Image (tube, rainbow, N blue to C red; front, side, top):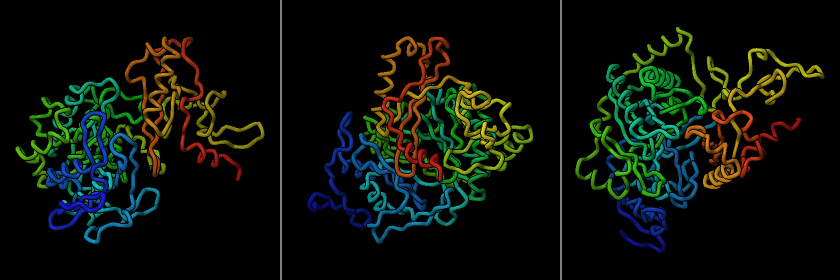
Length: 455
C-alpha cells in the first residue's frame, strides 16, 4: 500500500486501486470506521461478496459522505472508469438505456467501494443474457412492530414450500430487520414470468402462515411482507456482505439454514464478519451449482388466475401492465358507482382516477390516513412525526406500531420520505384532521404542478 497526496494506493490482484480520502469518517455514531476500513473489509470477504455481483450490471448506491448521510443512486458508469473495468448496456421500463458498471474481480469491487458503494446492488441477470434472470429473490420485509422471531418463522415457511417444489433456497440477513432468500434459476424465463412466480410464492406462503402478507399497499399489510416486486425489471436488493448504514455497521450475512432460527443479525458487522469468513468461509459457496426451474411456481400462478386471483400492483414507475388491478391505494379506492366517467357541470368528461377526495360520487377514503411529514431528510420527517404526536397525544396513544407508515420514495436521482398515520384505532370524532405536513418538502410537487398546468 502506498500513499499519494490524500489517497492510498492499494495493489489488488495485480491492479492498483486508488482510495481517495481514506481517513474520511464513514461511521461515527456507533462504531468508528473510515472509508479505508470499509474498503479493507470488502477485500477480506471478497470471494463471498463477488459471488453475488460478478458478471452482473450493478447500480451504484453511493454513500459519498458516509453511512450517516443520504446516499444517491447512479445507474450510469462514471466517466473515469478504469480501462480494466467493463460496462453493459441495460434497458429500463421507461425505454431508456444506460451503461452500467460490471464488476469482475476484487480490484473492481474495491474501486466501486471507493465511490461510496457500501451496499452492493446487482441486477439478477448476467451480462450474456440481460432479458432472463438467473435468480428469484424473496425479500422478507417485517412491518412495524414485527419481532425477529416472526421473520425467522416466515423464512422457514418459505424454505418448506421451496423444498416441496424442488428449489434450493439460500438465506441471508438483510442487514437490517429482514431476511432475503435467493434461489438460483435457469435463465429461461422473462422478468414478467419470474415476478409472476414470486407473486405465486408470496400468496402461497400467506395462505400457509398467518404471519405472512403478500399485500402491496402498506395499509393492507401485516406481519412480514413478501415483496414480490423485487423481481420486477430494474429492481435491485443489496447482495451478500453489503454493509448497511446502521450505527453498528451491520452486514447482510449469508447463513446456513440451521443458523436461521438461532442467529442475531446484530452479531454480523464489519468488525466481526472477516473473522467469521476466515473461519467458516461462505455458506453460499455452492449456490451457483443449484439452478432450479420455475415450472411448479408458474403452475401455482396459473391456478390462482383460474380461480380469479389475478395480478397484483406493480411498482409505481412501471407502465400499467396487462391484467394489473387498479393502481390506487385502498384508502383512495372509489365505489362501484363511479366506474364510469364522471361528467363535469360544463359537460367535460373526466377520468374518475383524477377525481379529488371527498366529492360526492367521487373517490372516497376507505381508511383514515393522513400525511404527517415529507422530506428528503428522514430524520427531519421523523422529527415532524414526534411533533405531531406531542400536538395530538390522545390520538398518538391509540396508534398501533403498524399504523405509522414510513414510505421511502425513490425518484430517478433522489430519495425522500413520507410519513403517514392510519387513524383506524382512533374514534372518528377524535381524529385529527389533515393539516399541512411538517415538514412539507415533496420533491415531486413542481413536476406534478407542471403536469396540471394547461398546455
